[in-house]
Image (cartoon, rainbow, N blue to C red; front, side, top):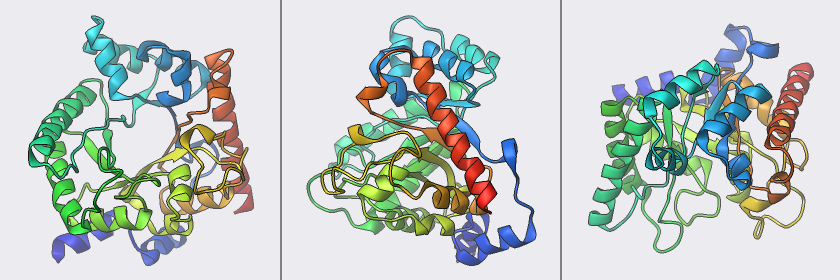
Length: 311
């Protein structure tokens, strides 16, 4: 019980904790609020390697980059040096706030799960070598099929967290709105809390909050280190929630999500959070990748300033 209370205190998963933060400590404003990150999926259709993606992110004005593990392994396979990549990213003034992988750590088959955990260890090690801080732990491989009990997820996520303790990379429990398993914010928060692990945290995404029916009010209850990265995107009014897909994501502010309220709530609970632009819209994969990256950053900053102005 003591461990759980310590976790709640550190992560702020409570309305009282969030309220206390807003009442007792002044909110940061302007450029001090949030860090802006480019998830490399946003430029996926341009088919550029991680080196060029990092260059575009820096040129556009981002502070960080969020690569996919497939890009890092492709870079190594093609003869790239990981120490060189780490230096390139640092020289550009960027940090690696998170990385995206798809190991099947939640798999029901024990052999498949064991292999996935070993892959997770390798992925974490690679992320650590480029100076990365976190890695996504989504419900990959269990989107369909039988439902997995939340208490079982707790045990499996705790195992991943323990691997993270050894590698120095924090696994962020990610929920996918379309998944049979782990589709809602409340489920992810339950699993994270019940591990009793001080580094347990969730990775939220505006699209997945909508797609899975979580809504957005819960974000104000997930404070401190419990929500360190928020994937930024928006969604149009059509198609409906039941059929909307990743490809339908639009720039933040170009859809119907309550973006200003989302940013106000996240700002109150964790003004140091990382906002990472993650889009899969083919319409944004035309022309100049720098223009796509710049447009996304400008729209995010505009929404943040509007949220600040609204109080």
